[in-house]
Amino acid sequence: MNWNAAIRNFKNYQKLERGLAENSILAYERDLKKLQVWAEEKDIAPLKISFEDLLNFIHEICSEDMAARSQSRLISAIKTFYKFLVYEDLLQENPSKLLETPKLGRKLPDVLNEGEIENLINAIDLSLEGGERNRAIIETLYGCGLRVSELTHLRISDLFFEQELIRVIGKGNKERIVPINKMAIKRINIYRNEVRNFITIKKGNEDYLFLNRRGSKLSREFIFMFVKELAEKAQLRKKISPHSFRHSFASHLVNNGADIRIVQELLGHASIITTEIYTHLDNQKLVDAIHKFHPRNAG
Image (tube, rainbow, N blue to C red; front, side, top):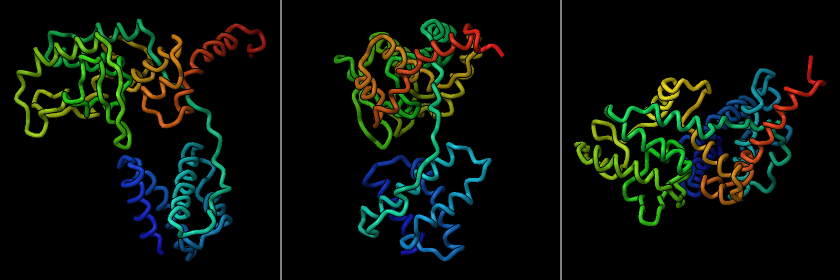
């Protein structure tokens, strides 16, 4: 089997059996193509490569100026690729098994406090076109902890307001049910009744909840630009994105005593490790206090 065939089969597996998003599959492919170019120059087939070959490749390509996170992603792609080949019985032994990824410090996400969220909401001019929709968007992002793509793909048929629930299609087309608070329900209903019902909707967009003035589903780019402009209008000094509302949703739940596994389910995290980062946010305040007030930190 040559490299092109092996990578093509791997992509099909990632898409059809693991249900990964297209962007994730393309990221895997980009990293594996680097290994392919290196191996083909040395006439090494994918099923003939050794652990030593992989080490040599990594040492060559992971130059000193290559970020640890990029190195980690590259090695992870290689390990996942060779696990697949073993799974398909194309290899008996996994040559990448002993590869180690560089240790990464987990970046604590920026979160907004309740006052900052109120300031952002109050900065939305409801008298302007799009005002009611944008208010509903912020309430939904913060109230449900959605990713941007989950928000833009939210459909009217996903709303179960009598049960105070919504259906969310997350990464890899995985479905989850998320509670929605009364304020978010109220703002969505106002948007639907006073704005959306009077929009001429383009064919194929009838079920999407949030629409632009031309009657089409909102883009991810619009949400990012809107949040950036809103932060400037509210004179917020923090650099935020739509994801900041998701981070704040999780942080506020954890800090107020919510079970970490419930938060994991609400966020749609495959691993509890991803969610546990929010348990460290309060600890950061303790670290900051030491840095600021302890005499041994001077100089």
